[in-house]
Amino acid sequence: MHITLLTFDTLGSTNTEAVKQARVGADEGLCIVARQQTAGRGRHGRTWVSEKNAGLYFSIVLRPKLETRFLPLITLMAGVAVHETLKELSLEPDIKWVNDILINEKKISGILAETVETPQGLAVIVGIGINIRSSNFPKEIADIATSIEQEDASVLPAAVRNLLTKHLGYFYTILTAENGSKDILREWSHRSTYFSGKSVRVMLENETVAGTTDGLEENGALRVRKTDGSVTIIEAGDVERVRPVS
Image (tube, rainbow, N blue to C red; front, side):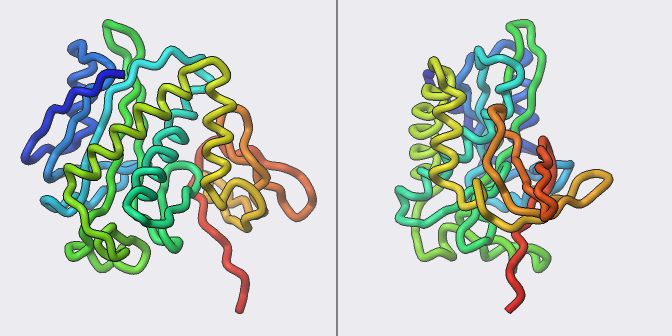
């Protein structure tokens, strides 16, 4: 995949700009990067805090030749790429299903993948935010989020971007190769403590499911084994770790 960078001082949302570029024919590998977002988005319409030069705000246009059922694996692939980016900075990240990267159970990165129909076919926009500084965190997230700086590492946004594009290119090549879905599931499982044996609570639209993680389905859905032995397949939902009572 050939990487092309399109950088902005300020954008509403890098994902919104990437969608626009995809619709007018942008090639796979176009990366939208902004120093600041004024309307950064997370999953379920949440806001992503995007102060100037405090993080990497990044979206990439992909045009994958994958079966539709395997498209959710793109989020897992991106999670692996972010994990390896942070490992190269001597950090110890974890991946929480489906789209959060944690350090010591605090969020340092989030991923938002969106599909868009274009004249050239389906495109997938993968937005990635990585916290570099935490001095501007609002009070409501200060206790649940962290940053590269807070974890005693020092790096410029451009260096994080370069590492991320390197790892995205590598793991995207794995995903789109023969048997790529199985390979990415294996790569993800090796890097996530949430893969199996983690006590979790999953908030769905109309119910809450509690149990223990029991691996992933072939499309990346999370398996949660409840106390009665039954398994619930989670296609989308907010997962939180259930800590033992001290």
